[in-house]
Amino acid sequence: MLRRIRRGRASLLIALCCILGASLGGTLVQAEDGTAASYNYSFWGDTVASPAAYQATALLSGPDLGVGPFKEPNDIHVTKDKQIYVLDSGNNRIVILDERFKPVATIDSFDRDGQADKFQNPQGLFVTEEKHVIVADTGNKRVVHLDQHIKLVKIVEAPESELLQAHFQFQPVRVVMDEAQRIYAMATGIFDGFMEFNADGAFTSFIGANRVYVDPVEYLWKRLSTRAQRSQMVMFTPTEFTNLDIDDEGFIYATNGDLWGDNIKKLNAQGNDILRRTGYFNPQGDVRYTPEAGPSRLVDIDVADSEMYSVLDSKRGRVFTYSGDGHFMYVFGGIGNQLGEFNTPAAIERVGDDFLVLDKALGEITVFQTTAYGRTLNEAVRSYYSGEEEEAFQLFNQTINMNANLEFAYAGIGKSLLRQGDYDEAMKHFKRSMDQPNYSKAFLLFRKQVMREHFATIMTVIVVLAACALLLRNYRKTSVRKRGVSIEQRVD
Figure 1 (cartoon, rainbow, N blue to C red):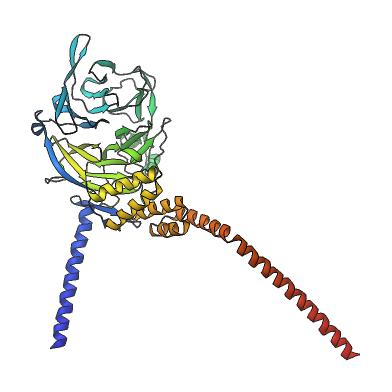
Figure 2 (figure 1 turned 60 degrees about the vertical axis):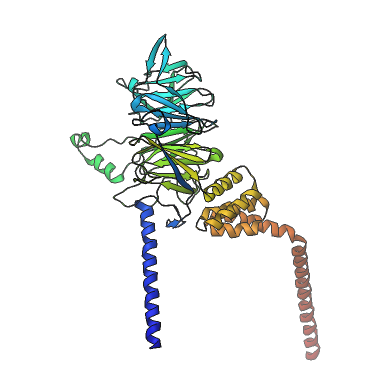
């Protein structure tokens, strides 16, 4: 009877474990293709659970804000003093809000030679630190530059250049401006990169063209085909960019629709990609996905302080954030009907540490605020970036206490320990995070440290061993000679 009870308990325990395993497995699948869950990726590419770094706290529509319904808004920008500019494309206007989401002003026209000029289906918006407003006025095929008083500074229209095709149609859809008032525009149908205009509005060059990635099988087939067959094939052309942003140092961060290459780039003044990719996987959105769903389609990028940046995946509605070294920090968002999910996400922006996500189809703005975990992780990355080793060490330890699956945090602790000179402990954390290059660096420094600290002892031992070896050698020679002499005497 007792055995039957024990067997029943064992069967019940096994059943509960199976149910728990199935539920955990369902969570991992959901993190790959279903509605968004908070997750991260291990060194081996497995989806692992993670605490939520952000949570949706508000959903704002035009009527809620007192500015009337938004109609297919396409872009959003936040200034240093936290003023929010919403590009309401369908209504051909720009709505300005303060940090409390109270209406400040609306820009629906500007004065041009004494007459009111209006936008037509604008797609892109950028605001400088001096509150100059740069608009990609797509329907009017121009870029409009207004000053902080909404006075016209200049209009950039279709440029004339030998670099452009004869029948080129200038349709800018995204714009940014650097401190030298150079405008970088992303235009429809342009595969040569971003169009660069100087402070006077003259076109100068293209910058940052994507590389062409060719399928070897398709290339071989094209080489063997006839001219008529080749004319029906798709040409090998670079992919178009999908969005761009610019940081305080003038580096352009860009996303593109490349499925095989790097779909996130950081471009310097020469147009070279200098994005650091030292994480377990290159920054690209989702690493794991089903063939039916396909990879992430990144449509916007936002650059924060300390080289952190976030990208928006329109396919699954997720926002991915990376450190300057390319480590995946956290993800939030999704496609759906609940708070924190979207229908057609179009743009993202930060207000301090909070996020704003613009939904084009619904004409709504979702506000995301940090959790304790998200705030701690953000501050840890900032402290490491600014060289505050002790504070970074403590903050990364706090993140590990909240999320043991965040493997790159162990590398952050290791780097902090490395800077503090604790090479032995740094090696242990680098081993935990599978960071082989930094482990090797810590090992070499640890070896030098050991040699330096124990040099006198090591040299003393070496000298003593050498002296002992020399004495032993002389003793053996002397012994051999004595034995030889004694044998000769016996023979005599």
